[in-house]
Length: 200
Image (cartoon, rainbow, N blue to C red; front, side):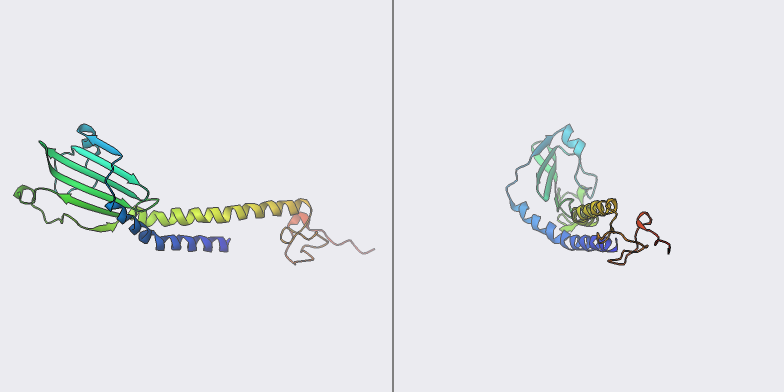
């Protein structure tokens, strides 16, 4: 049991070490052609809203597009006045199975005092904490289940088979007189223990 728990800890730590570097690989996919798989306009777009809180209360979203590829989720949201986009936000999530990194870029009427703010329009890439914390548990735990559960199941089946044959569950040697296996020396389960015959 201790070895199984140690293996789980090692797998989770390895997954944690690889989590953010793995997510960084997907940033290159942002340079690929923008081919949104979801395009919403009007009320449907407004219902989705801004993908990340804007620095000030922005107008409602009029156009909302999303492109999902393996390890990269990109959302483009825009407020439109007439035929002109007045406010827009690109929001990218990188990583797998959950995003571990996020990046947002903002555009608004910078010269209009009404929208003045000290928030940068491109704050850069930052950690997306749900993925940073949960991905190692999901990946490490999943690998642990794949590696440990089949072995534990096989061991349980083998142990039950040996007990049915009245053999030591550890080494498979036939149980003899006494409370320990005469081959490996390990204690026998109570059902296999036999007392030595009394002297004649």
